[in-house]
Length: 207
Image (cartoon, rainbow, N blue to C red; front, side, top):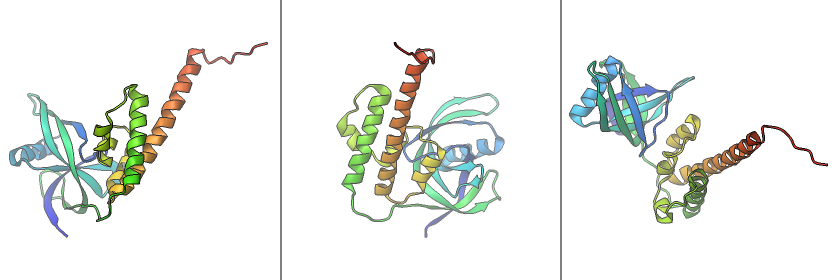
């Protein structure tokens, strides 16, 4: 097991995924110090979901991709991009910011599951089409990983954490397909609700 010590941790009320771009507002002194170190060393930090029941053990490493704004009081607005999942093996309290001993996680060896990938890409294509009214490019969609598809949709924190916890791309593809199909049903429901709202909520009887 390859362990990395002194890895900066950023507990937040969100889940980041590899490839996802996350806007962050850095205002606490400890996180200003953390980001300053990451910028100086061009190193990663970890976003971990601080859920109602505590800190989740699996998070997503992120790299600062762009500084949007530096304010006179030291606050920073930035964009971070998710890179790779990790598990916290031990918390550390000896640095100026939250940190831990972490293990970066890799997927288990498995054959490529074309059926799971095709199902996920088809469901994602349908979701994009319904949400934007624009048919996406099939070649672009076909090249997307489960993380890359999920990073563009607000699936909810539990669903995103579920994806992050899985060590199998075929399992992630199957989950993305289910999530996309559920999202399509919600879009259908919203469309019907809006149609009802446009009729002032009244039921029209004839005869």
